[in-house]
Length: 111
Length: 113
Image (cartoon, rainbow over all chains, first blue to last red; front, top):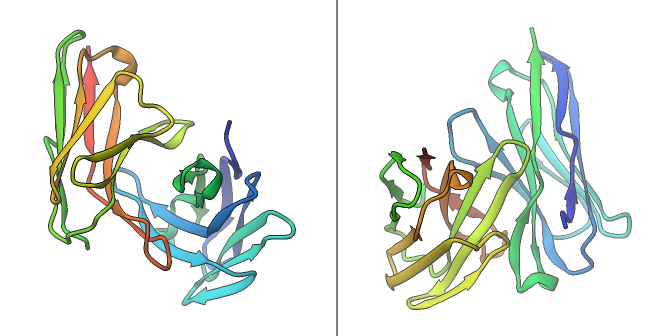
């Protein structure tokens, strides 16, 4: 079954902050990754958390808590170009190190 | 970019015909993957390769086969295409580095009538 759960859609206003959550049910993994995908495009890598805590890259930050089996992607100062789908992913040591993706969160940004 | 190309980019075919999709990379990455993407399902792993002639199944491998005779090329074959295999197919490389970053090709949109 699906090991990664994330909301299917999130809506936010331009200039605001939005958080996209990801919960997972695997006990063995090499950290949590995030990807962005625009309509008609390919997924592109955004961030990776190997350890607990917050990683910041410009307007985007990502957080991991292994004890809570939880992570999130935080997008600040939202721009219209951030309208896209966002996927969390893990390399699952319980599945022969296969990379497993969540179903994705569609982010809608209102002007 | 990791220099990943996919061919063809679009294909329409009929049920029962064989189809081969090609992925070519120029970065000498050891690992290569084939995913399919469908609405509501995200990215699902079909097959992957961890070296020349070394391949393994993903979560949705039924009806698909792969081959990797050279480091740079990874082929996905639908032996007898069905309408349920209508999808967007992405090839990817990497995923085994310190940050698990994968690099994706532009995708192939396949329609099986």
